[in-house]
Length: 148
Picture (cartoon, rainbow, N blue to C red):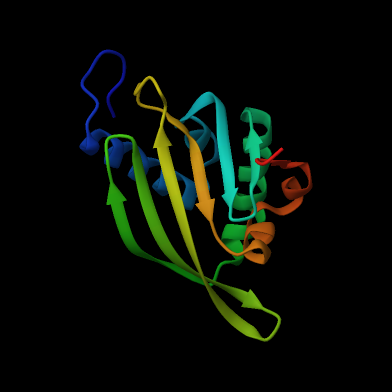
């Protein structure tokens, strides 16, 4: 990952995004947080909800890593799109549902910090509201509206 004055490229973004996704999947909280700027922004669409700041994002990842990820039945990366500014990943995620396994399609966009300093500014995540609520967990009630 490029830091400081190095040239930021699409390949730099791919390296950063892949590293972030790997340590997140491995449930390494500190390594995941180390990929983020001091004041990250996470948006959840189409619900139009947002969290900002390290404390909120840390609480989100604590839930994700202690509750959501261990209960996943599986996931598959469907497609990736890449630019200097972002890495977009579409996943099929299988979880237990009330009537058996359910597969949900989720699109996550990891975006580089404005400074292109080797850190992520945050994520924009698209999924059904029931799925997002389950993924975000108790932090959901603290999210603010993007539209207000």
